[in-house]
Length: 256
Image (tube, rainbow, N blue to C red; front, side, top):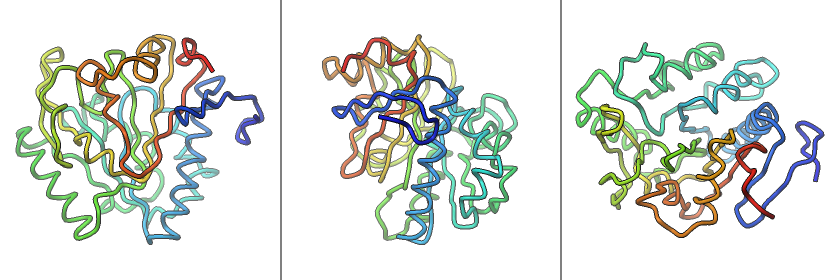
């Protein structure tokens, strides 16, 4: 089939609701168009668009695109509300901070009201930050289900997504909420949405690029269910859509 965004051939794996794009640029364009479509539909249906962003290298091209007039002019930013799926407990102006990256690349450029941006309060101790962020999410949704319109996720080489790392206690969490977690391998506290909260979303979009992710991706999608080893396997929407947007390098070990 042809991808309308690029005019190039892409492979669709129906089993996974997965699309493979030739390049990272093609993937970013398609992801931007998908977000615009979801935003438009969400605002039309529910009066607002609620998105949870991710950090890392993969979404940078997407964020850059969303800052450009040809894309950002298609989203009603005054009706858009931004959260994050996880955060490193480093200062907001630290380049490792996920919110700092997103604000620098596009949020500061699109005219979204500052009051519509819900950053994780990294100025607090990790446990306190998790409690405060959970309360902010609770207050935002009120009596409505805690359903983000779209949650962006990445996939680590070790199988983690958000800050759901292999072998950590948060993987056993059954409550839809926010948790603090200390990552031994990084020597760092992180804050993360729990898998049950992520799974409530209307749409969950994994973006995975690079040959170094190919083996992990194949294990997550085709391997034995081992969420303690590959936490990304915990992401199974309750009623929403699970989408995988993958570049050809990351998909190199997948078969039709």
